[in-house]
Image 1 (cartoon, rainbow, N blue to C red):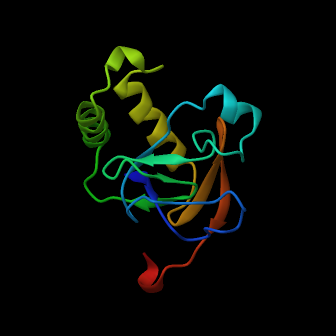
Image 2 (cartoon, rainbow, N blue to C red):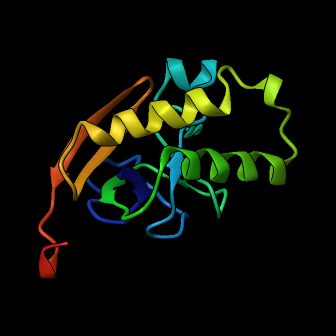
Length: 136
């Protein structure tokens, strides 16, 4: 199954790029705040970044990877664990863990493996497809 993971590749293409995620960790998207909606490249990153499930860091670029044996249930479990670790109440989120997992997996499914995407508020768009040594 395809999933989006943090990557440092293509960082710097935008002046507002940045990352403090672990390369290769699963990512999800926090809802963009009103400030970020008014100024997507401003100081608040929530409208242009993905959040790392493990590091709780952010990255403005994510890569589509094929994760052998990975399932939607696995992503839901990882996301649920991430939220539990942060102490987030599931009713405080705008969509359920299952809905968010499905959304993230649908996003990943629409691009080829090794595609690098960026987020601009509610739009996730292709930045570049990279060739990885060894064909992976």
